[in-house]
Length: 155
Image (tube, rainbow, N blue to C red; front, side, top):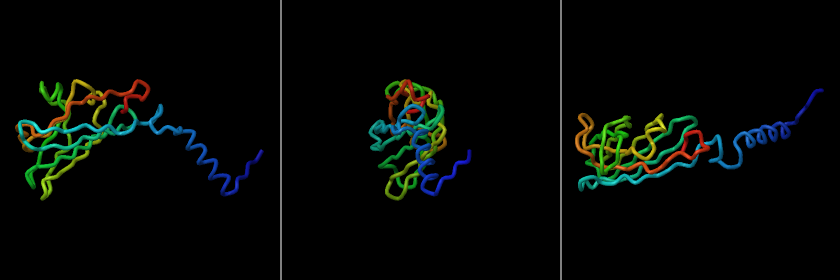
């Protein structure tokens, strides 16, 4: 048996197959959940604050994007995922991409491939006053999210 599709027929078939593969729910099983936003709060009256956005990737990794405001213009800052909490700080578990402030004191960085196991309660995100050595903390966010049970580890 030979099937012949016109242009519209083959396009409709491809669209139907893609929709069936992805499902109608962009956050459904097998698909990453919507991004989660966390507040980066100033530490020790640093005045630096911002947001961290965790975006799930397929598998057991996520992308973390951190944006900070009120940095010293042109300054560079190391960031990490630490074990513990902002109030009970612990060891570094994973390095985040450094942030360099622009002339207005704003900066952001995106880190891909952050293990989901480190993006659960019991860990926190933190940026420091300098790049190397990182020095005292400037801004911190406790991770209060957990992967949904049916997502395969994504958020």
